[in-house]
Image 1 (cartoon, one colour):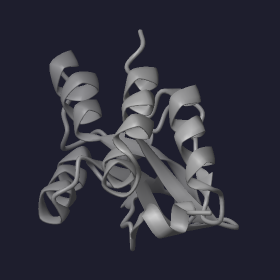
Image 2: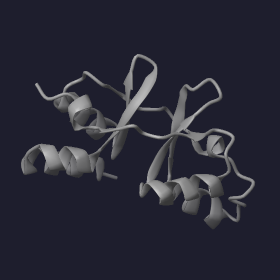
Image 3: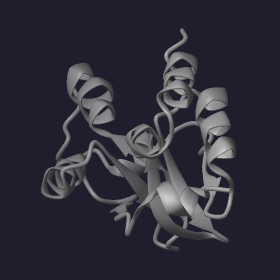
Length: 138
């Protein structure tokens, strides 16, 4: 059984919930990623911030990314996957919640990120295509 731990990108870096969106965007650029987990002062996972959140939910609405914080955008129910959960469970979770990225946790600790691209590189085209179709539904 292939696990989320085997598919994930390890060493995910968080953006602090009190860091500005400008700082978050710079971190995304440095890491060449489109999303960052949001962690609180207690090192617990609070949400996910995407580059799209910064542009659509802040800038396009006239917000100031220098004063807006990452924590303001970690809205909704956080969806995660356990490090030892199966790849099939990860794909089902992505499909059920229509998300392209999942923080991978071991207990309460963030150990990596599992993106649809990680699934595509490791599993068959049919499986990946099914997940893409499911998460793309309106």
